[in-house]
Image (cartoon, rainbow, N blue to C red; front, side, top):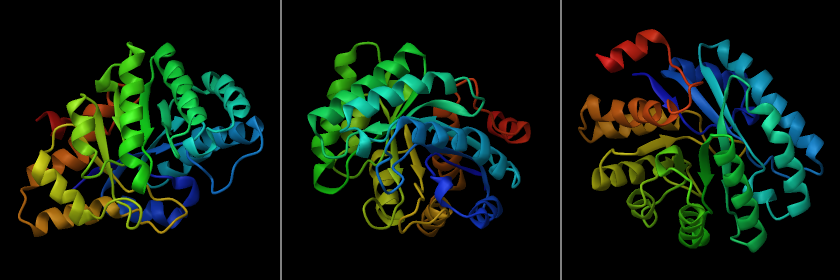
Length: 276
């Protein structure tokens, strides 16, 4: 079964990972800008990173028949530095017309500080001004509920944010309903330690249903796997869920959200199957 991984940090993965994803049915992925494991020291460093996301990675993925899309931002872990964030945001617009750029992300909060929130709001304004989709990171562990509430409140205060064009990622049992009730799309991240296991993800899908829910590996330089989505599919099959539901979660829902950008396409054969 084909699938789309809506959150995969492929700059930190080997080319063999692309091959394994292709063999497992991945036809497209989106790569949000993220923290490299250390704080970048200049806007020039971010600009080079944006070039990697818009030039090198799409070509590497294409070698295995995978369509690579990306999101651009200064990640929440670096959002505390207001001066740097302003410099980076000033450079992002020149990349927004690149063919694989879907929007602004993954923006959000890390420690829920005042500076992080201000940087988040600047990113939201940039996305609204340029008509971009928004991909959002919510804090991990004990800060998640507070951070998710701050994010939802900030989006609602803005007044011009369309919830249907926003995906709030890293949802867990105590935040999923908050995101869905506010009308946003949500992402469940299949990451073994700081996020959600396949078993917990299926539990949540069974409770809340499939509407406006996507799943992703968020594979990066940490302990993660680029095959997290196929492993979720396997868990759903093990529990007896129909192929139709599995396809809706791993393939149709990402298409519904991402197709709000005119740049996002999937192979014509697969699109015909979906319409049919």
